[in-house]
Amino acid sequence: MTTTSTRDTGTQPPGGHLPPGGPVTAAGGELPEAATAPAGVAHTNATRTFWLLVLVGVLAVALLLSLAVGSKTIPFGTVLSGLFSPDGSNDHIIVRDMRAPRTVLGLLVGIALGLSGAMIQALTRNPLADPGILGVNAGAGFAVVVGVAVFGVVSIQQYIWFAFVGAVVTTVVVYVIGSMGRGGTTPVRLTLAGIAIGAVLGGISSGITLLNPRVFDAMRFWGAGTLSNRTWEMVATVTPFIVAGTLVALLVARPLNAVALGDDLASSLGANLVRTRVWVVVGVTLLCGAATAAAGPIGFVGLMVPHVARWFVGPDQRWIMPYTLVMAPTLLLVSDVVGRVVLRPGELQVGIVTAFVGAPVLIWLVRRRKVSGL
Image (cartoon, rainbow, N blue to C red; front, side):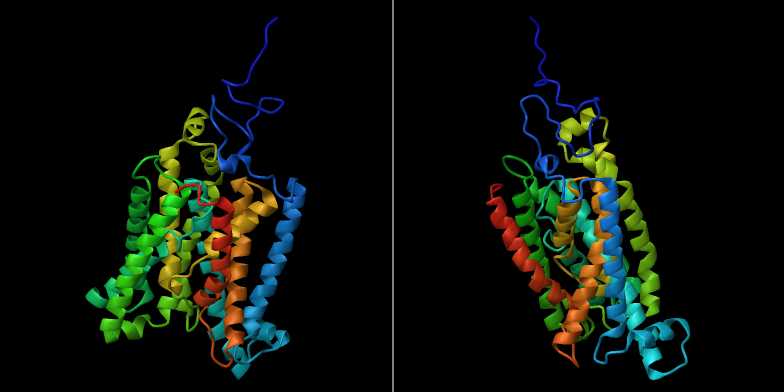
């Protein structure tokens, strides 16, 4: 009698189709963690679409709150009339010239931070990855500080190019350091390398800032991560880069599903790993560079939101990316509103608020993994 085994050929569901991020394994190997993740609470495309629309509604509410709430609360009716039929009153000027650009920038920066975090987590198969934790934001911020101190840059149009260079160099350095030693790259090793590099660059940035009054004056609010005092000109400057990075994130979603299966199996399925990695680095650089130049280094948004998205839809990056695109700006805008309220009539920088929320999430994730990658 002849028996058939799937041990050496990998497993397939009935019909022979390989699901993106589904349970496929190679000979004698173990399934990567991302490939064995739960399917999520939304099991069907119809359910996922429904919840995505609900989250879009929540984002719309967050946008309205960002326009209405501040040192002075403006009624929603006045907000809408100020947007669509302004009459030059003080409330309308506040809405159109101060809160509207701040809100749009918060939307863009939230999208950038969330999608860059989702791409980094998928590419490195590291659930602890985040542009802040891996030092990418610190690298971009350090480059901007150097630009201000050494080259005298003064505008966001100049900040952004330094931020791009800092983001890409830091990404490469962290990945190289995290790949050294026995066992190659592990999630916790990458995290530790990123935290170390980020701490070093952050310390140097702080030293330069404290020793140079001109740099201190330029960086004192930007360095904590803030959306305040932003103009339409700043929004226009970063929008093309964030739109381009967003398109990259959506286009690499399918290849990242193959990456979740592990390098060997992904290659055997025809995935071009080098091209995928290059595009992810390009996307992360565009998104992190633009977001950091516009709002300063804001952490933890890219860590938290992809986890919530996976809880909704499972490991499929084709759904994680749209969910992250909606939820990340919602989190950032709500955090910004909270920062305006808690110290009214002053305000708490949004980067501080996200740190208060994100630090416990990071601790929970590390404890959940039992630091097995060390």
